[in-house]
Image (cartoon, rainbow, N blue to C red; front, side, top):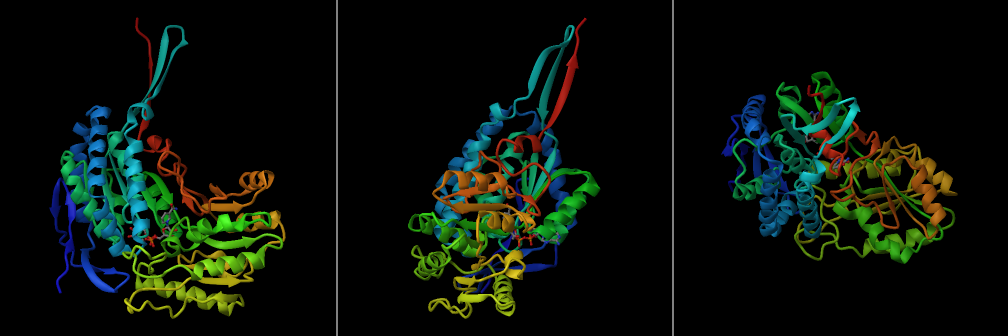
Length: 484
Ligand code: NAD
């Protein structure tokens, strides 16, 4: 059966790459091939950069409020096509349809937040910095920016950056993950209704060659990257070499601490979604569960019974609580970590290996898995697994839990369940991860707050969205003036 070939979007047109390297796109629930994508070349990148550069001056001189009006139209177009975008997302990525809807909602929220440009992009002035001399700082766009994004959020992640880049007057190129190119393609099709000027927004599909083409291109001012830590580090270093602005968000090993005074019944729904939501393939997935003091046995009993009650199946089924992993390769990787946990002596309490779903015998499923008595130096307590595998590391007190969190190297997110305010305060004060949940699981900051971690989870200093992102996409030009 023939499947569609994803095209690039350059200068307002759908164009084919002339690359000979073609990748396949799979439905993770059925293991059927559903599309193909050409792995673009530096030549494709060059065409997109030229289009974006040519469009820049006119876009840059368009009043911010007029630029924001395009975003209002984007919001309307996305609302009208909301369900269709979510369905494409689930079909190629595997996550539950409700999670896909949540992702599209977060994408739209970034568009909404960016429309505040007329207050969020203002500079500042001071009269009389010396006798008869005034000073003003204007925030100006810089030119062409690009985003390189991962497979776990095929819709939203590019939109952590894109609306802010455009509304501040820059032009833009998106490089989706080659594993999941269909969602962003669908989004760009919807965007055609908005009538953005040609070249303002472009998309080039592909893998390493497109990434390197973007990193090395002299006409690109800055890169927003989200993906695994080794790639994030590589992007950060190479942007340093080529003198670009860069914000580079990496992987995670998030820890959920549970105090003996926590309300386990109330905590369970958010705890279960923290670990098994998106099949553990979130940078904000819980990975290590830390019962503190004597709460361990009761916690594990409640947690495993809630996990077993969750329906595992196709993400398109509204009843499904956990979908498949996104690819056969990711399934193999996760199974490898389960073997490693057994080999290193952890107790496998819930085993997701060999898990099958009757209607989808070929899907990339791994069932909910939990190891107890994991030691801090075991591989499954240190490396990002990115799957539905929980490692329980028991801690004697809060200090030990915090010590565990602060020695993982990653510092993306952490959370605590407790009924004690002083304990919660001490936790949020001392942990290194920069996204902290209190009685809410591993929660994602909304578009008007910054998103990003510390340590090996983020390279650079300006995080995704929030108010800070207006700094990333602008330069403050300081004018000092005197009139005779
Ligand atoms: P990845 O690093 O493999 O790929 C990310 C992007 O980089 C893709 O577009 C890919 O084409 C490109 N790429 C990969 N390797 C490259 C290389 N050697 N040279 C040039 N380009 C390369 O990440 P992934 O597997 O797609 O995504 C999962 C990872 O992303 C996880 O580690 C997850 O924690 C992380 N993530 C982090 C955040 C965050 O906010 N910190 C959010 C989502 C995902």
